[in-house]
Length: 205
Image (cartoon, rainbow, N blue to C red; front, top):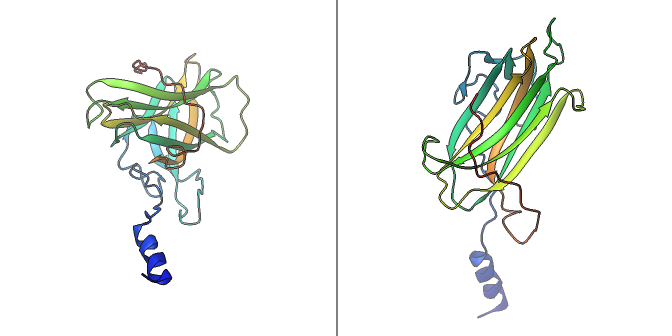
């Protein structure tokens, strides 16, 4: 076999490196909130829009506004024991209401389930939360969660919520450009500390 043929053979045998696919539907909220289950005070609007990349046309975002608790969530299929990266852009209300909630907070979580519809048994969850007492930069901020789907996982529920724990006003946050995709980098030889996964069901609003 010639050297040229040997090189061609290696190229054909080499695995293709494909970009990870975002399994969430309508994650950029360019025209509406279709694909997401939302509570009464969670709406799509054009007032705020995070431009994640050049391919994302001008559109809108999801506004989660509440005097108690409101949310948006979506259930997607996942593969057991696969590493996932969940990324979201969140913005505190740049134009607070006349009576803003002094105990406002948002939460961003992913719950892994043992069926394909996020309805049977919750296995584990990843979560991050922000309260009004924490320092927060004005404008859009990026939040990322990394974790491995449990051995029997069949689906994952991505949920973002806004809460006014003191019930003394209105808590409003915007969310945009949310992605959930398998992480080829962290699943390979690149080592990172494992995330803390709590084997319990998160509180239900």
